[in-house]
Length: 401
Image (spheres, rainbow, N blue to C red):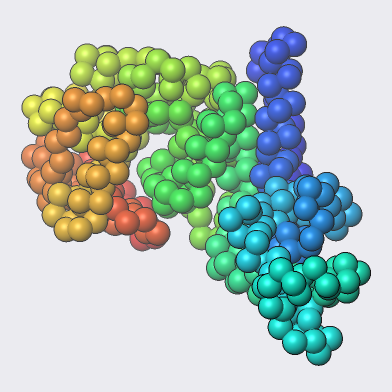
């Protein structure tokens, strides 16, 4: 199976000269960010970078890092970042420590910081002390840093097929810009929503036949991209339920720029439209998604949208609703703070939010004839997100995750 991170994405439209230049920069960015991701190679990159950063060859650390990383097939970016242990406000202390360690190793007394001693010290001996100390300090820091990096990388390592899915799904966004690629990659890596919904087979709704999935407030279409990636790499991680091919993917997004990125990334494999959720006509669907959307609407608009979504569900359809649980305590307040900061970053200074508890969401869905169940969906995050699954009475329950 080819590496979906490094494989060239299909070009959906011809690229002009500027587009090809952007693609080249994006490809370089991806390679620098993803090369040498095996735990041992990540640890080696950190260790080598720290060792080079402790060397007294100031001004040459960057070419030394690039050369060493290429020869050893390590991440050039991680190697160089680790070498910045010798930043200007640290370098004087590191320099002095290396000289003292060098003198200690050859049995000389500590260096007295006195002008008279510095003037009488032979330059060659001083340089030898510095080199000897740099070797010792660099090797020690490099070894310690490599061990810490290795343990961190192993603890964060995912199943190879999970990594392949992240690579294939995020790869589609390269032509949308490096920020979009980083954003999608980060969401897939750190937000349990996407793998939780697709891996549990919720988008299939217990059926092997293709149907329509309606994502209201689809954003960049990350969930759709993950569904397509499952079929692109041709394998599922252990324990994942199957996702049928040929699903009709329909997304509505209110922000034109974000919707344009979804269209560009997904091409004709999904139907993405810019629309106001309060007024858009909803097509019939087997699965409807309201993921991190409803709290942006006033309470009355929330209930109106729920009426319309339930009315659009096919017999046996399912509604997947994720939002913050207003009874989630400190995690709920962490969610509120994060959403407020995100709104300010977007320039939405007057954005209002309307949160409800998981119990209230269930009550609203049950009042509309859906059988409900709730599962936490915030694993690995400080937030109070829960997934409420609303099923028509005819819907078969999916196997427990």
